[in-house]
Amino acid sequence: MGTQSFFASDTITALELVEKTFGEDALILSVEWSDDRVEVRATDLSLEEVKAAAPPLPRAAPAPVPGPTPASHRPGFLDPARPSPFDRDAAFFRSVRADAPTNASADRDAP
Image 1 (cartoon, rainbow, N blue to C red):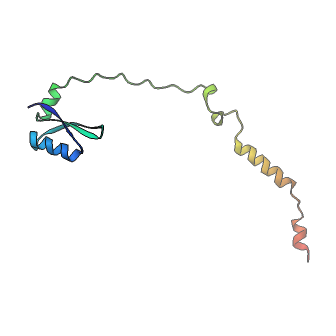
Image 2 (image 1 turned 90 degrees about the vertical axis):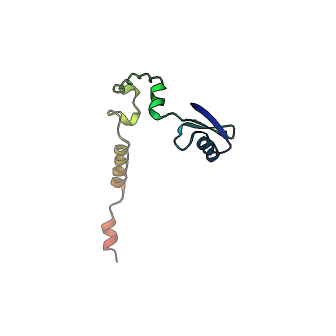
Image 3 (image 1 turned 120 degrees about the horizontal axis):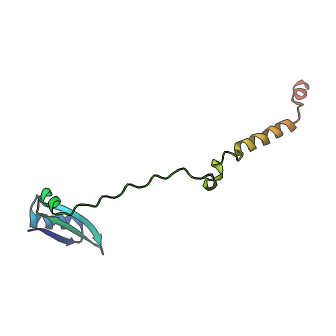
């Protein structure tokens, strides 16, 4: 019989139409929804017959492998010459700690 498209309001109904027309050995080629209905394309041909009838797929050229990103295009946090924000924060906390009063021992000795 060949290939036919079956339209129905849901997939189950469309597949029941396929089974009634082609039998249990039908080959489903595609299932697509459009305008609140489903379209099922099916055939009674075997998988080998469908493969033989289909045109060969063109071979795509392999995608080029990108080279390293130039330093001018890298985000700032990847720039090795740029200081780390952790270094800046550590320097800040060292300065705060250095400015803190050191009379904690006097508080321990007080009555």
